[in-house]
Image (cartoon, rainbow, N blue to C red):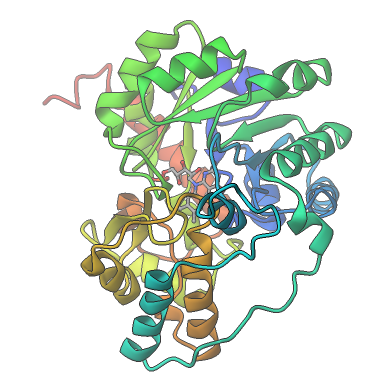
Length: 380
Ligand SMILES: Cc1cc2nc3c(=O)[nH]c(=O)nc-3n(C[C@H](O)[C@H](O)[C@H](O)COP(=O)(O)O)c2cc1C
């Protein structure tokens, strides 16, 4: 039987080179713990978590499994809050300017309420942790990173941006660092910043994604950052995908979509079923939700946004466009209008499994595919 052991399994101290993508808010502690316990690496999607929430989740993962795991946050290099935009739009910059959504976006929200017969949900409840919300993006990132270090998390992953400024602190703590990229230029940046692993993510991927397909991207990134190990992402949902990634020179896979419909994923059952029902053409890239290009399972709200020809606000501010529409949809029970980030591999997800079943089946099928290669069966 072919072995799946390699530098990635050795470095991360795992059985299979299968990594659960740190999907926020889908990859909470339950699925991260289950994937690690099954022999892969579970990664907590902590982008939206406060340091206390990260610490609590890490404690729960450790209660469930003694195996290694990771924590993923986003390190975007440019975001702008509504307050920033309001300040910019006033000459001289008024630091006390009231954050207001530009009128055309308010009108778009009204169109959404009318089109889907939703009630305007009014202002959101004050956030649970107001002090946390008031921090700048950089202050929040620093606090999240400090918590990950304080909790001695074995693996850190950044889904956007470059972890370079934190690499020494992580390494001094014995934490491995993974950086996610969608092109060769950023792969070199991540390597130069000192990361231990580069994840090359193709456009097929669910969530924030770039323009290059996995098949073309992975070998180019392998060539660019060698001898640094590369992990492939985007469109990989079974053992055939894992074997193909290894053939491209990657040493592991970072998978999101295949885990979306699992029992442990933190996602509405209706949205899990939508992933199961989705076929290859059922995803679309949109800036509606975050201001950055994000691949989602299609829904009528995205259709309305795309048909509007509106430009998205920068990451950080665009959330204020989509957020009230999501609250309105939830109040009305219109789960079909809720964000459902997912990739082209959704067409390969046909039933609800446990996270353990996904990991074990992917490993077993990859071993079987690799076993067939020397016999020539792949070409006969
Ligand atoms: C629902 C969802 C949420 C995601 N959130 C994050 C995130 O918070 N941080 C991150 O690094 N990547 C995030 N991603 C992207 C994944 O890390 C990963 O690159 C992608 O899912 C891999 O492609 P696949 O979906 O085809 O398996 C998300 C993906 C999905 C589907």
